[in-house]
Length: 106
Image (tube, rainbow, N blue to C red; front, side, top):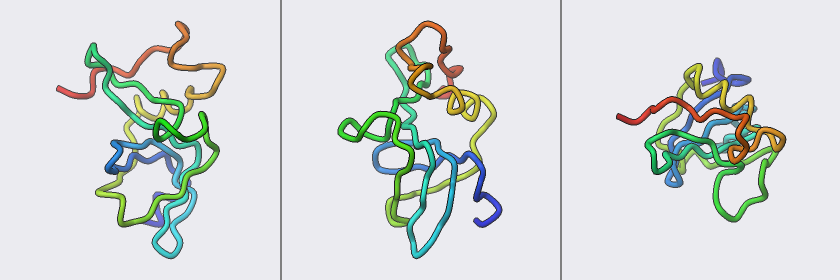
């Protein structure tokens, strides 16, 4: 797992897939930088929400997730990394200058 520290990863949680930079793993806690929740919209396109759930602040700098809440994690694919890199307030998913991810769910 240490080889993924500093990489953009995707982790499966009860909320759904979270894409973030894996900053550290200490005492059973993942520290995630710039976490974004991946969802599939009504057209079947994957998009990143500006946080990890409906009640957190938008565009959080960090999130802390227990190893018990993560089903799996892996390095994120290129399309997800590119979308994550553009997931800042000035590039909000509701603005026309951001393209959604290609259909990832078939």
